[in-house]
Image (cartoon, rainbow, N blue to C red; front, side, top):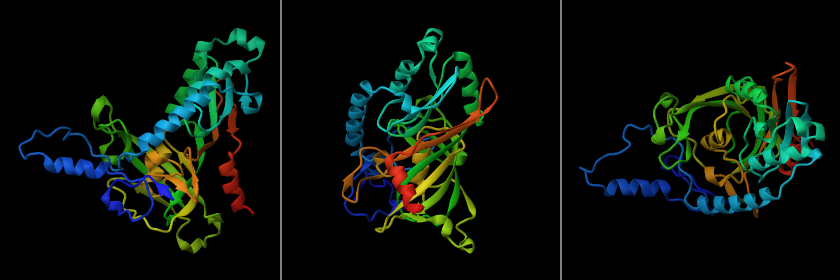
Length: 340
């Protein structure tokens, strides 16, 4: 089993056979070598509470990006990928390893001849943008006016989203948990978790820390349905973590496969991936955020995160719209183990 390691000493890494990272250690050593009277920079910036990406993740991510670019250049949607369509919207099922820009550019091929005359290519707009390796529901609007209304619905948190993720880590001591934290880019451009009390503070590059909130529910551990836990165990209570410090979750040599459903209450970049990392259950294959790269004699070429559903009020008709994407193989296998 190979995982991009945790970067911070607080998590006390004891796991064998991992891709080693010395990012945090190198930063500490370089600080110790500076003379006492050396000018201090970035002292007013908030300190991220999650570790930086492991050094060796750079090569893995580069290879994945090159592969995805090649696949995306020849990718084309089919009618089987369409989840919903009317004259204003089209929702499709994005596969893993394809860039959203390729989804957008290939939508035009799905339009009927009548629509193709009405809908201008420059008016097609991605309403939600999934990461390269995240699969699932992607919604495209067909006019600027409809796009503006749907963007406002996302901004006002009127769009409900659910995701499935298969994680590898320590067995959670909770069944449901709400994670509230800050979110932003560190000085090297990586997305990191910040303290809630840092929300609004300036970051390098001119951005600022923004709030981030996710409800995460454990569905199964190693294929065992977690709803079978005794009601008196305390695991069914909905806990809340308000992040102010680095994660205190210690790692262990015994790791489990943890299937979770996530309900993001904000829409930050890499939000679910960052919160799973903070909780000590990074997503399988997510090398940027310490997920295992190799697990049970298999190397993973992408993280296992799926945008399961997206629901909202139709920006034109006002009707409720619920889009569900078919499960990818890894998710259907994980879910089938629970309900056997």
